[in-house]
Image (cartoon, rainbow, N blue to C red; front, side, top):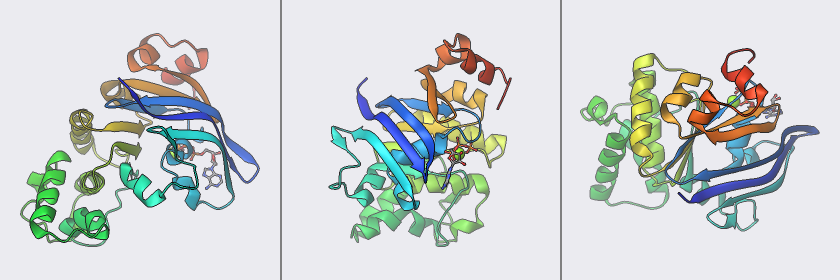
Length: 251
Ligand SMILES: Nc1ncnc2c1ncn2[C@@H]1O[C@H](COP(=O)(O)OP(=O)(O)OP(=O)(O)O)[C@@H](O)[C@H]1O
Ligand SMILES: [Mg+2]
């Protein structure tokens, strides 16, 4: 297993408030890593650092480095639009664009100038299939994505990320707004997708983390407390704080 993205001594300040206190963490290709920890511990902040989504928030200072395939993404040379295609993101609330399902999926490719209808059709079908939502939507590709259920919308949003051919998919509580059936579909999909992608997922759902992830990172108050194989974290954690959190003593 080789490392695809690594943060070193990563600090992030919102104004003067230090939200990340020197995070060293490395993610392997084709693994699912779960990020867990109580509300406000910095999981979303950390996730956004990995594709520079925090650039969009005013008064943020970041120090340290994030190296993705031998390049520091915080270098001024980084094209952040390209970066966010290679490192895509899925959010807690499904956020399809108010267009048709088809136009949602081809959006990124059309921006890049792709006009070939055959190619676009092919990407739509492949992405929707990979996101396990093709059978739900194949007969209504030209209807509004907003007409779908929440679970279907979230899978369309995942397909939209897949359509631009990313290497890493960041997911911030992608199933917390969904029912158990939709959640199960997404979990099964993620286990298939990890053959081709690296997945980093924030979750408050401990059983989800233990079902699907290879590694788990436990955060507390802006610090990484423990990072290890998921089995180790859940069965035999090294730190008392980890044990207290996963056994439901706080958070
Ligand atoms: N845009 C912002 N401006 C200022 N402070 C922020 C901002 N976003 C987050 N914070 C603060 O940074 C800390 C970490 O927040 P973050 O959203 O990363 O936590 P989280 O672990 O994702 O929590 P949750 O589980 O509730 O989503 C919190 O104290 C939060 O109040
Ligand atoms: Mg969060």
